[in-house]
Length: 321
Image 1 (spheres, rainbow, N blue to C red):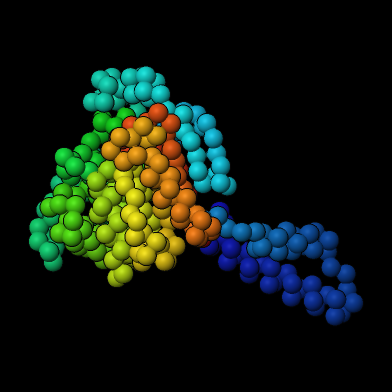
Image 2 (spheres, rainbow, N blue to C red):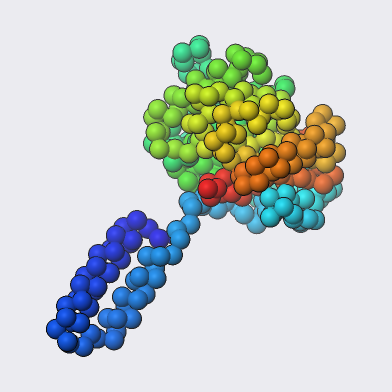
């Protein structure tokens, strides 16, 4: 990616050399070939497309998908090979309770805070990891039934995947939030919204993403339908969650904001056929909509929380046009 300062210097250089070329031609003078070649290279550099911002990596090799069975629909629909013996028993010291030490780093603990936030709708408790003011990116994880603010900040469960997003945020001057909320209805949605609005106020330039696990998806859909709030979001992740039949009427959809869906093919709580239909409906009615479905073959309800590649998903959405 060309840095803004570099682009400015290239532009100044191009203008200077172009003016010198024009003067030389007007006077019938020769123009040094090495300067002409330099001007040509500068002009080409200025026409190259700049890449969208990407998150700096963290343990990419360990968290990369173990295998891809199928990629279709312009690589928007990906079927990932998942094997419980390898991806749970082989990855965890204690299956489903404690991942192997190589998957985690405790560096984020230095930037972790248990917060009690006073908001317009009451007190909201949350775990905050990273840069609480002036963050470049904000990711909020909303837990499902039976969870709490500590679930999404537990470094050792779900194969260390929560530790990875915490490290990614710290490494990228970001902020990671995992709140408690009253319910999965309007009250809970208002609490999450109030928390995020405060975070946005002190980090006004941040890209803001909401990731929802299981029933937390009901909150995601409520935020997506909020005409005043949805445009403030930069993207949304549904991880082992549920479709919303009204999604294509939402403010989020109408603004074509990026959506990442991770789902297990053997999910008994939310059948994969429903999420496949949800994804297909979006693609059918809006072929250029920035939506991705990563299906974990043989995965169950919690598999997407364990296996979804945070960096890949966020980079896809950051690069969406």
